[in-house]
Amino acid sequence: MEAKEILKQHITKTASLTDEQFEYFFSHFKPRSYKKGQVIIGTGEKVEQEYFVISGCLKAFFINDELKMYILQFAMPTWWTSDYGALYNQTNATISVDCITDTEVLCLSNLDREKICSELHQVEHFFRWRTNRGYLASQKRLLSFMNNDTRIRYEELLALYPQLYNLVPKHLIAAYLGVSRETLSRLYHAHK
Amino acid sequence: MEAKEILKQHITKTASLTDEQFEYFFSHFKPRSYKKGQVIIGTGEKVEQEYFVISGCLKAFFINDELKMYILQFAMPTWWTSDYGALYNQTNATISVDCITDTEVLCLSNLDREKICSELHQVEHFFRWRTNRGYLASQKRLLSFMNNDTRIRYEELLALYPQLYNLVPKHLIAAYLGVSRETLSRLYHAHK
DNA sequence: CTACGAATGTGATGTACATCACCTGATCAG
DNA sequence: CTGATCAGGTGATGTACATCACATTCGTAG
Image (cartoon, rainbow over all chains, first blue to last red):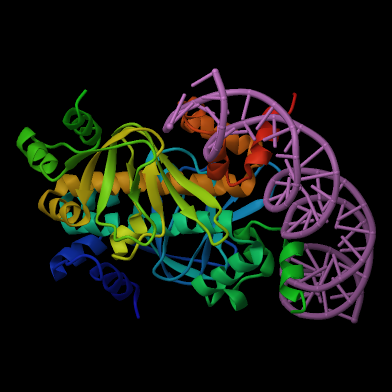
């Protein structure tokens, strides 16, 4: 399926747009392809766009002073990603985004999002709904972090992204769970 | 200042509403008062409303199987709270809300929020913005959880809610930080 | 005032995890 | 092929925290 059709199916689950309205909405997106390993947003850069994933897999991550990496999100097809803090507040990126596999995305600039949100009430509705889902997911993950040990969070992660286990190296899974790769390895191989 | 004026100042920072539009918006809210210790949302109940705090302080929290409590949010004046997962998905509450102090709120039902969002584009814009802020705050807290030790998170908490230190018992602060009250006590009294 | 429960402090002990060190095996460029 | 880099596994050790136990202080209802 082509990118346009994927986006259309995605948004029309939440917002009712006429065909003309969708065409107009779609005209603000720019398709791009990236290779495995390519950096889409690098720390310290200006952030002007957000990204809707058509195929492949991205990661959004933070690197702290000791060079430890924490993954905030794996972005699979029909997921959106960016450094939203930097994007909305017009600050430089503290969160990076790069490609775990070859990836196709649709890019939407911050300005264009705000423009079409104000022009089309249904688009604003869609983005409210989308942000709401992200908020609920983030809150759920926070709770899980406080409440559950690593093994349970590992199982939750595989339930959330079933494709992930064979797709990404284990040290990235550890970076999502917030444990060392050694701990994840021991957890996974504990006979029981 | 009265409730209406507080809400008006709050929303007009983000959305431009005429006086008539604001009156109409406001007509969907119901004022309520609660006493310290009163439960606003109890586990397992239906959740029909969200709450805009006018005065006082609420907490939104989760209790796990071992009866350990985790606080998701302290809701101070001009903050919104509810069990949003239950509210949006029409499921029973897993998150509870109760009063740390005597509290006045404005209640808005899920149905009314959706109604005024669809009637007034600017209101939809406001709620998108509000949810966005919540999302960014939640993501920031998640990162801090993964990256920082308890002492730093404690300092961040006091920066976020400066009034909190004298307002709420320490075991609630521990429940927000996700550590035991003993650990928080030792942290706080470590001479250095 | 008194008394009781709630909030808080503090020691002793156990544990989940990090960190460091080192090893094996896979992949890939030259 | 060779060597290099990356993913992954595993032991030894240290540490931040939980948990349990108990003491102390505070706030509020009687």
